[in-house]
Image (cartoon, rainbow, N blue to C red):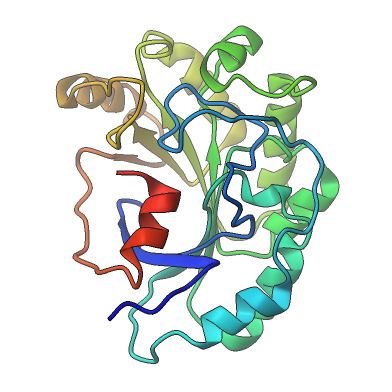
Amino acid sequence: MEIKYKYIYGPVSSWRLGSSLGIDLLSQNEKICNFNCIYCQLGKTQRYITERKVYVSVEKIINEIKSLPPDLEIDYYTFSGRGEPTLAKNFGEVVEALRRIKRSPIAVLTNSSLIDKEQVRDELAKVDFVALKLDAYSQNSLKKINQQAPGIQLSSIIEGISRFRKQFKGRLALQIMFIEENKDHIDEFINLVKRIKPDEVQINTPLRLSDVEPLSKDEITRIKERFDELDMDIVSVYETKHKEVKPLSSEETLKRRGK
């Protein structure tokens, strides 16, 4: 019999993080996001959310984590879910509370939209692994691929990432979702990677159910070969092995990750 959880999901087999237990600080029926990415497995963003607020209390999140089976194997506690996790105003507080009760490393998967804000950078700096989305190489491509809320500028995102790189002591990954719209702009992405200097680049394509077709394994392999010239780890979604894990609640996991 599955235990019913409202704010955590998984663990899931992550191609980046192994056995990953998801923490959804948003946990709403609708997606809470300031992007409307054309490939999102959660469907369209019905309304943009741009202001940070508290959706779920620290106490409720921590109580669920405390109730986890003691023998549950977790490689990472990962902030993700139905939208952009840094839109939760108490994100930093939850990280601090989690540190006090668990030893496993903490990761965040973010769309990078709020990283131009100093407070968000300071909160992200408290975790061990940050995966920053960067699918766009220009303001026009940001609008076409990520369909961001008004006011979000790619130049501000890149400047924020560069500042964060200088202060962050953990592992920084830059994740690029390659699709038809951006696959022919490898030079632009390589220049951005050289400027940002992440620890790794994650080359992705939408393999989950989506309105956008994924690139083939051969296409992704050719893209990866271009990045292999860089002096950093380059990982591809097609090449990474997945751990065998069973989620605590299939329903809650499906709600946040899609099929």
